[in-house]
Image: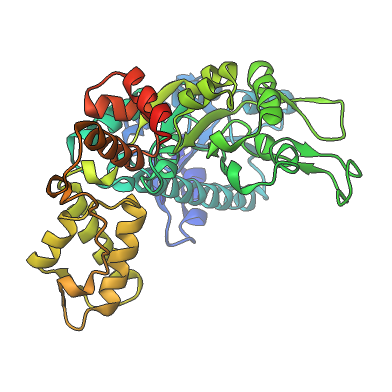
Length: 447
């Protein structure tokens, strides 16, 4: 919409000139005059900031012209200007969408000036909000938030896309440092709930006796230290998204209360009997296999199925191939930019050293190593010695040891259980053996 263009639709040429003179006292305003509604309609494609519309036009009533303009573009403010001070007409036009109704008297130019000043300010505010919204959307687009082009990551993006146009719960599984929180943010800010809050809570960081208050809120005096009413994370996230990180650490008592909230879509603050309705999308994350916890009896099966929704498994960094170097170079540029340092680059030897490392701490570890290497490097090139990587390649010489086949199998299974954070299902898939075999060996050798 043109932020300075104003249409004046007025069949009285003298009054049209008067309005134009007053409006042009603002050098930013550009005025186009029309003596009839039809010519105005033909020029609506120019997207004026506002239209002043005479109520008594030849061949078309002001009400009819207003309706046609609003049908073409309901966002254009239309200021009705009339020679009659008819309260009923004014009310009817305001109901039909007129921005203001101004009577042709001595105060008309001042009232029109004030109205256009408010319209301009509101238009600028809308533009700023739209720019901010576009910036947020761009910031949290999948490709900008989660760097990578590997096949495993593209599979993750495909699953995330399926979660955007609905309210299905999403459960994200991945090792520590794989970016589960980034997936949650990307899902929220690309969904229909993006204009409402994104609220995150790390369940493992909240003591068990405080988690209920943290999630559901509490009333004043409900327990020692409750000096005022406080709303919980569910109410904070109303109409938006609640991200529950490390959900596997929630104790059984709280799990049963969570189940009720998810079923009834309402919470009860600690110390209250009043039910409060909430509309929240739930995204959970864990670095533990919830299905295994259900089997072990430490996580409720009914809650598990409530939360599972669309499961997304984030691949560890070691399985993402060339993404490792993409991320490494990205972190170098980002750290140099944030710290106003000359841009540095990784030498080919440094890149080889990065590729050869398994990164048990995943992306978080890579970022830490890269940032330190930028500081330690003397020149513009980051050398292998600048990368503080401790070799953890256990078992490289395993074949040099004289072991039985069973002992080799135990070593291999132990290595994969450690690699995949004791996720027996993933280990079975990676080794192409049955889960029963994995569980049997875990039990037999106390792994």
